[in-house]
Amino acid sequence: MGRIFTLSLTAALNPTLLAATTLMLTLMKPKRLLSGYLAGALVTSIACGLVLVFTLNGSSTSSTAKHTVDPVLNIVLGALILLVAFVVGTGRDTRRQARSARKREAAKDKPPPRWKRQLSKGSARDTFVVAILLSFPGASYIAGMDLLSKQSLGTFATVLTVIGFNLIMLLMLELPLIGYATRPAGTEVAVARFNGWLSQRGAHAALIAAAAIGTLLIGRGIINW
Image (cartoon, rainbow, N blue to C red; front, side):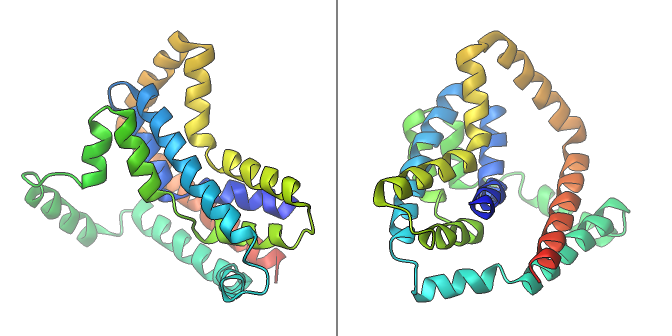
């Protein structure tokens, strides 16, 4: 069960979830947006989890999950992430930066992606729909359900574990909502500070996070070798 818990934390690092949460915190009425997105994410992820956990064992999907979390793949992926973080952090990617600047200049008149436009509307219904479309399982989620399918738990216990897995995976959405419910004024101040920090230090924080994720993947690959 410990490995299942670890995979739920890894699944919480889903780039789409992190990007959507960060975006919603910078928009008007973030509480409403987060609530709609959380509801949609729970519907999709729990439904997919139940389907996976009751069909994975012995299936080709299970074999795919095993291959995905293979130690060699973890080490290689972690090394690539660390390499990218090193190149960007040391300023050695000047060509990429120049290309990115040209693309940003060319994209000024282009509308943002549809899912970002939907999130920006400020409707919980819209974020609910966006979350349903964006919350399909990734590698860590499939691996977690694969492990859970082999625990020989009863049906009720399995369902509760799937729900718990998803609640942990969606902590990035739940923590701000808990703050709004228990300390609304303090949470508003914290979100404002976060937005200010993000505009100043967001790129640096992303590099640190990438380095941490890369190191974690390499360590997990070595441990599971």
